[in-house]
Image (cartoon, rainbow, N blue to C red; front, side):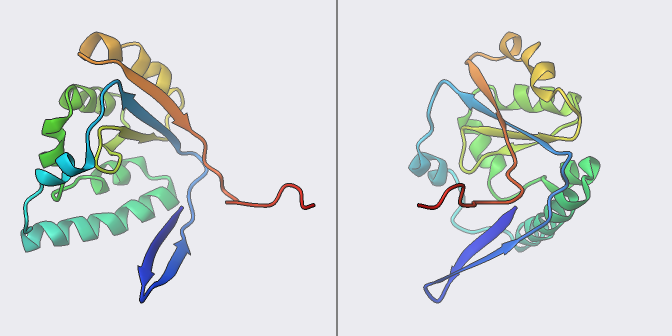
Length: 159
């Protein structure tokens, strides 16, 4: 897990430890959502309390991912800056969120959406969701498990 930014034109990147037990699953819908549209629903200004809320929660997300603490992760991934605005643009969002929460996984938009991210330490998340997902949604959602690469990029063969 890394966090990166540009400072004075130079890249800055730091690594964070990630507990080995996490499973990551993205749900990709059969429709698109343009980034300009997703940005257009956001307010021009944010409330200071909401900004502080998200900053503190962001720090807790990192710690939860390090510790493997699923309860902390579910709490820390709560958002006040963009998800409530953007979820209205994503059909099935609330139905999927409710389903994911019943199996105990953490849940959020991936970027601006419409892809959704689920994180859990409980094995079999994909199978649990597959049993009910199509029956509660209007659209088809492809489930794609993500593999965590703990070593990052490395050279396999040099010529």
